[in-house]
Image 1 (spheres, helix red, strand yellow):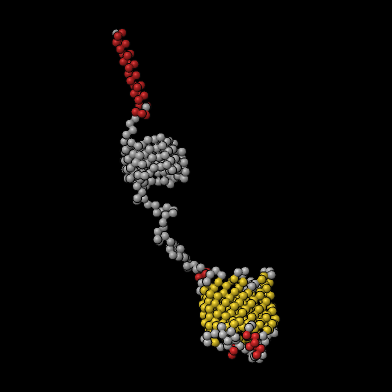
Image 2 (cartoon, one colour; image 1 turned 120 degrees about the vertical axis):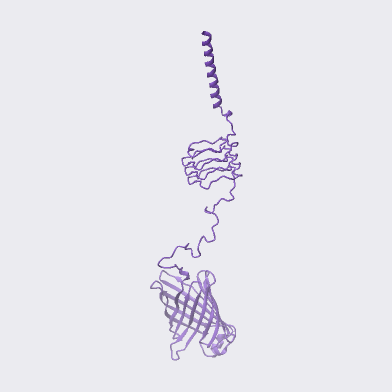
Length: 394
């Protein structure tokens, strides 16, 4: 009986030693087989909010049939570390179609993650990545084996827009409503009248006039222009040069015009071409050439400047030169510069500056051979006069 009891004690001790050894081997990671198969693993209820993947080795695992379709990653994964994660194994058939990654992944680190394995058949079609991933670090992530050939990124900002992305009128199919299609002000046909001179010369007893009317847009206009004088003495003679022209901008500060003209002084018609605009220092400049039916060419040059004394009072000096290409003694014309005119006005602008009465002083002089021709015909070669009139536009 004593011998039997000793044997039982020895058997119990041996069993305890063997059981402890089994638990020790199970706790040792080195004895775990790395080639385990994860092809049928179900991650549908997996909580990855505080997981550390820093040294996770998945290089030998077969994950070709892993199903992540119901995997919920909507929690806080901001501190997950994937820097040493090795995913070089076969993940060709992994399904992420229903994977929810809407959580906070702003601080996830994928810098050392190795994804060089076969991931050609991974399905991300239904993967929800609407969460905050602004701080995720993918700087060292190796994705050389992934196939993005059929990946649709057409909706991402910076991609190439389709040909019909915007309609020509920028409406994008939205109706204009009860008021119809809007129109830019520059494309509306408008009209205007500008009277630069309408005044009386006391010395010469005549009324001087110069006006310009137009109709059209900022790009194309039809203009009617006329300048001249009307005698108020017995003969009531009217001398004018009128033109009908097409007007178009040539640049920011200059406009061109071309058309036909008629001169009542020599009773001849002409073809007209000219340019008008603003020279440096805001000098209003114009130059017009007239080719008459008899071959005579007339050149008119003008310049004016507005010197503002304050918001209403304006001093306006003007200069004009007239030249001809050949002699025409019947009309008192000689070749070269024939006439010089100068005037200084003091104007006061009223009614939103649309009406400006003025007083001034004018001077006219014949030039070159035209002086001798006028002396032979007993005409004045120089004249000056006080003037008074009005300028307006509407």
